[in-house]
Amino acid sequence: MTKRLNILVLLLVLALGSIAQERHSYQFSLGDCLKFAFANSYDRQSMELTSESLETTYEQSKQQRLPNLSASFGESFSNKANGWGVSGNVGVGSSITIYQGGNISNTIEQNRLNVEKNKVRLEQYDNQLTTQILQSFLTILGNQELLKYQLEVLNTSREQLKQGQVKHMVGTILESDLLLLEAQYYSDSNNVVDTRISIENDLLDLKVLLSMEPTDDLALVSPNTDNLDGLRETLPSEEEAISLAMEYLPDLRLGDYDIRLAEKSVDLARGNYFPSISANANVGMGVLSFDSEGNQQWYGKPSESVGVSMSVPIYSRGSTKANVKKSRIALQQAQLDYEQSQLTVRQMVVQAYRNVISAFNAYKVSQVRENAYGKSFNAYNIQYQHGSITTVELLQQQNNYLNALNTYLQNKYSLVMKRKILDIYMGKQIEL
Image (cartoon, rainbow, N blue to C red; front, side, top):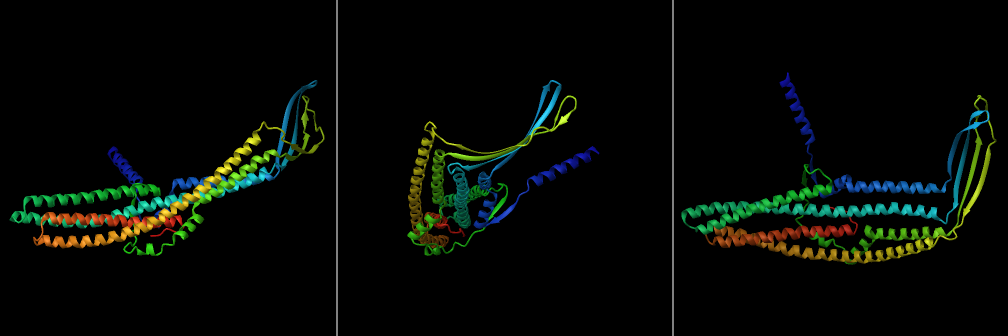
């Protein structure tokens, strides 16, 4: 019986462990990555909660124009000539602010601007997250494509080594040539291992950006990147790119909100120069009372009052004046920051635009070189099989091809990344 119980407990533990270690598998395009990240990013969810809080503050501030209403109830015990007595009173009161130097309206407007500004800040975060995911996604694709070619080269190196071993046995090549072939084979094997490790590390980094469990399986859907000439052909003019970015980028819109909020801060500070006017109304009466002999009675008639009060600031020891001055300085600073942001954005977009042109030219040159070195390497490999060239000549040509291939793939994905980053600046939807 004890043995059966132990087996049952063991099976239960294993079952619970398998549930806890459940892994999910995903096959994502770039668009799928962005959707998943926006839905699961903890930072983004935190910003959305901030938006809800700001919305609540804004809605509550609008209620400040309405009168308040409160009720009161009091009960007291007293020691009279004929013994202890109990008595009480009830009342209802209300007050409303009629004028407060425009502070209520300015506070409402300030809270509304904060709500809108946080939405723009969320757009800015989305752009930053999109850029990070795009870079990580393309880095992985570049390494995956590189790995495909490295595996082909490794197969070629393996065959070269096998042929070299046969040639060395029959005495047609020296031992030094065989050692060179072995060294090249192990070098190519190490390149494959390093690239696979890089892919796994980059996938882990991408999962962090997606807020995905690191143990989940993630496979990326590669887009068609055979013909990238369209990235240059569809490029707008530099002036148009700058104009679109200046209109779209959240960075500038945030600066505009900073100016408007600073203006409201000036209005709020100036509001303290003006009087505050409020009205109030109250209704109250005594309630049933008892004495120590159990006698009871209603006492007191209802009392009613209505009043208007005004508070006029006369001297605040310079605090109001200082606050107005500081808020105006803050406004000037916000305006300067906005002008600086405009200049920075123009410079950033011009640089990004010219980076695209430079990347396209580098891509086209490296494409020609990779194609030429690839054909040359194939030709040298055939010549080596027929004994027409030395091992050193073959391996030199193979390394030339690998260097050209690495440069081509780096330039290829660099072009895609720089072109898409410019699209982000211009507010265009990112697709691959």
